[in-house]
Length: 76
Image 1: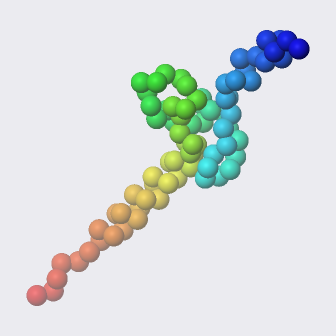
Image 2: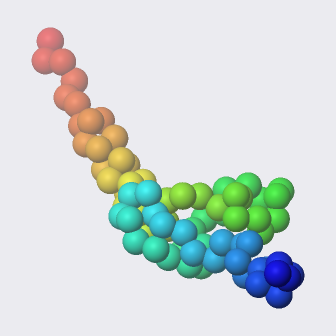
Image 3: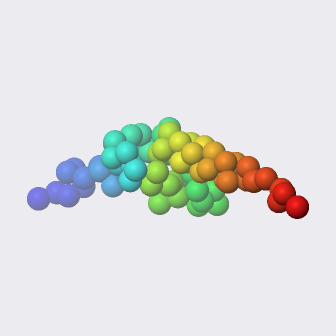
């Protein structure tokens, strides 16, 4: 049994990842943000939340913060 012929570099590297939020399998390099720039393009340096879910989370949290700041001055 020759393991070198059976295993290729593609089997050892992850090119796709399942998003923790939406559960869809997407391309690692195109659809996920790089969180650790100093580690290069290792699969562990990409986030586990896809770009579209991250954008949705950030915009919804910003809307909540902006709505809570709508306070009125006390009527004295």
